[in-house]
Length: 149
Image (cartoon, rainbow, N blue to C red; front, top):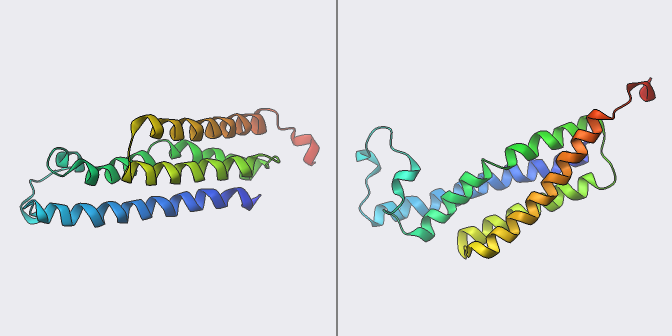
């Protein structure tokens, strides 16, 4: 197994936790400020229920956290496949590019959030992910077990 490609995945996991803390650290005080009482919240309430209740800039962090639970779920297995099958010279770089762009996307969405720019960052990250996915397919589809025997 080639562990160096797992480092970007580990960093993205850690970054997701940082975004969770950032989200909670801004939402909870904002809920208190608006008179929201967590003890009186209706059963089964969800984060989406806070749309229109809390300021948009506060909810941007929650939007990004949700995004980190979506597309990266494709990144993680692609990285694992490449770690098991073997990485090529560009795979680790592509993984780091993806993670760096996702972190930039997070910070941008949580603070500035101009959709046109945010989409460009997202598109660049998606291209890096697509390249990793193609590499994972190639590593498995064209693997020759006889070479290792």
